[in-house]
Image (cartoon, one colour):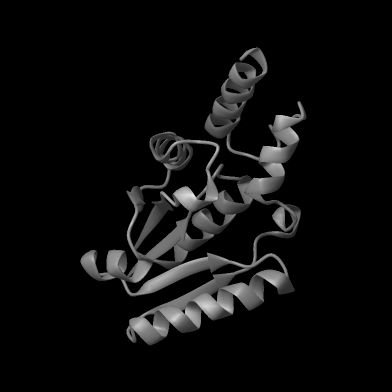
Length: 162
């Protein structure tokens, strides 16, 4: 059974990593699909986000990382995937994720969404929070995988010098 864990991962956090590691035990193959999503004005390019994810996940043999820029259900059909894995941190996440799951199922009836709650130590983490802390000179090393931390450090060093 193959599943898809989609997101912008800008940047990937230890909360994402937690969901991916647990999801990799649930499914024969887990595809981490990194959305280009230019509307969000990402901090990192799609190439950087894919590179950071691949480096962070290289120890998980049944996990692959791919970029995508089309409608999620189109990507799923093209890749013969009908399960979406999503993380839920709070009630506010649930409302939005429920709408997405129902819309995806309406457009692709074979699609099922599986929700996982992150471990309690990661329940508060979000990529936007990491970007904010890092942009203000805070240490995010305990919130993100090491390859991501190195890229963040490099990015904000460049920004502060530019």
